[in-house]
Each structure stands twice: as C-alpha cells, then as structure tokens.
Amino acid sequence: MFILILSTMMIPTEMLVIPWYVLSSELSWIDTYWGIMFPGIIEAFGVFLMRQFMSGVPNDMLDAARIDGMGEFKIGGKLRCHK
Image (cartoon, rainbow, N blue to C red):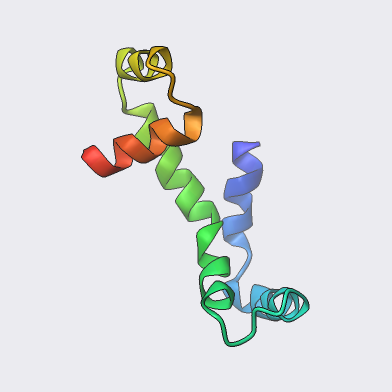
C-alpha cells in the first residue's frame, strides 16, 4: 500500500489540476478555503513524511499513549505538536 501511495508522486501535478477543479466544482468549493486546501491535505509526500516520523518514535511512547486511552489519530497529533 505504501509503495502504491509513493508511486503517485510520479504523476505530474499539472495532470491533477483539472480533476481537482472538477471535484471542487462538484462539491461547491470554488472560491472557498476548502477548494484551496484540499489538494494539499492528502498528498503522497505528506503521507511519506508522517510515516517516516512515526517510525522514529519509540514503541514504548506509543504503547503508553494507547494505555492512556488515546486513539491512533490523537497519538499522531500529540506527538507532532510536542516534539
């Protein structure tokens, strides 16, 4: 799955502009902040950076957060904010 996500980085951004515009148009996001932010929110490079960061966090710290009742998304958010 990770290889598949990274392989999308080989697609030139110019090829994705029209599908992003069509999607923004269908969702009525033209001239809104969502229309600007959406293409950058879910990018292969962002997924790659988060994976690399999370692989460097000690497992003991992740286990302690899980024992404290944090979910996976909350663990990632807290680690990103406090490091």
